[in-house]
Amino acid sequence: MLKMAWLSQLKIKLFSYSSKGLQCKQRLSQLALFLFVGLFASTSSAATLPKEQYSTHTVATKLNSPWSMVKLPNNTWLITERDGHVVIVKNNAQSRVNLNLEGLYVAGQGGLLDIVLSPNFNTTKEVIFTYAQGRAESNRLVIAKATFNGTDFSKPNVIFKVATDKNTPQHYAGRALVLPDSTLLISTGDGFDFREQAQVITSQLGKLLRINLDGTIPKDNPFINHKKPNAHAVYSLGHRNPQGLVNDYDTEQIISHEHGPAGGDELNYLTPGTNYGWPVITYGKDYSQARISPFTEYKGMQKPSVDWTPSIAPSGMAYYGTKHTAFPSLQKHALITTLVDKKLYSVNLANGKFSQTHIFPQATGRLRDVYVTTEGNVAILTDGKDAKLMLIKPK
Image (cartoon, one colour):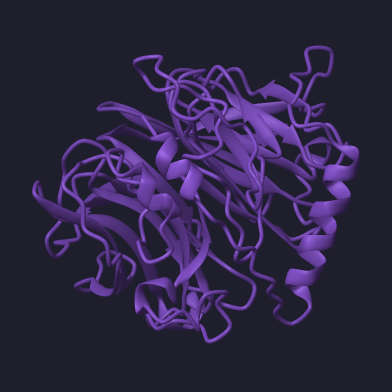
């Protein structure tokens, strides 16, 4: 339990930060949002989404603990499995290749996690992976790149390692997002037993980190002038286990969600240099039902836009924007898969209330990830030892 003596000594300094005008716009948009929006999201039972008729198709079956997926421009699907394999789905045929990741650590929640395409994939064929590396007594999240030739991958090259090691197999976070400026945002978890490090700026646990695609640190990161190099990659702090990360390109805002403990799952609008409070502010309790902190707000810390208590255990997230036309009724919604609720939710980001609707009820069981294709079709990845990838299209 967080000690009161530690809390009384806690001093948080807000950092003002701006880059190319976008971050100023993010802050103003977030301020306006909180002037009109209450904290808690409501679940919509009257609304029926999507309004369009649709059909469901199975893309891949017999997946072994998959974590994420991406669709290539030539309609090939790449699906990561935590044991280090990537399943390739091409022309309705499945194959499985081993990435031979350096130091892959498969235990607890560790293993091969996210996959995203390089912004210049069409020319470089580069694919970016996140995975757990190390051993039980010392492990960390790392980021690697490999090229894909259509049937296999080059040997992955690690471009960045989270600098703070831990001795637990939990809370890696591990979500990656390529930003519009072609930098890479990466979520890191608090390691479960090291929650206080989420508030320590020189620890890279419990953070959002921003790096260049070659693993170097952008010169306009919010803590780039800190005397300790470990702080230079930090984009935001005070996170527990963020596994959803999307760019809302319609409002030019970055959105994340993260697992709380027993309750206290969160959705946050991210701005650089901001402290999101874990474990000082939370609506959740410890799994023993002990109180983690007496605070749900604290000076210098950002409260969540949405709190889910009891927990829904959000896993993947995708943004359905105005560029997507297959399901117009889902535009400007965040699509969120859940592990505990075992549903796919659509959260309205444009109605000022964050109203939620359970959509596509054919997707049942523990849901691991969601992906929106260029055409606007919705892919849903289930979890576990005999998982599948399904694709939902309008009729």
